[in-house]
Image (cartoon, rainbow, N blue to C red):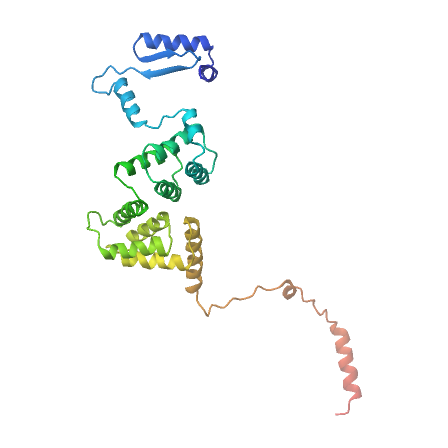
Length: 293
């Protein structure tokens, strides 16, 4: 790390260390070199209104509950449920799990005591939301555990209830009481049409832009049409918009508009006759002499 800083700053490693020690003496930072030649740096807060470094470290320590040794992980690595969970996580994240990733997944499985099917649903939910940050997934898992979500039905109900209010808020319907009609519409979009929240929220945006008092019924017309057109993402919507725009132009084009074809070059290339009128007059005179009138 010191070498990296030295290279970026165009300095010697010794100069970097001296600079860090200097600011440590001035009580601007806390700096200490560890035995493995790495180092730790922390800001030294003099203003009492700012949280102290000790309090920050304590808060971090309380939040970081998933610290396992490799030995502990190896001892549990034969657990088929844990193996299945790690494989599902790799599929959701699209990469091989690092040691930190494995610690977090093991912690969700071992520490929060969330059922395996709930953790799997959590991972699938994060994948649908395009959440790939393992720390964000960890925090969401801890939040679910604190809310005592102990089975799959409770997890689905919790996620769906959040979706309900996300959609209603996007329509400007903040603070309304959730009714069976609201649920009926939203469940149809999510479960029957299988539309993503991204598409539904795009529909909300267009509903708000097109009418003064947005309603679920108006939004349903938009989403139903998108479902018929097999819309899967925002790119599909943009393609459909372009197609609609082209159709509108054709629709309002005058039907009786005559298109006058351009004149060809041959029109201007007619050769002249180049008449010889002396010959014509001679022929006419001869014809008159020979003809009996």
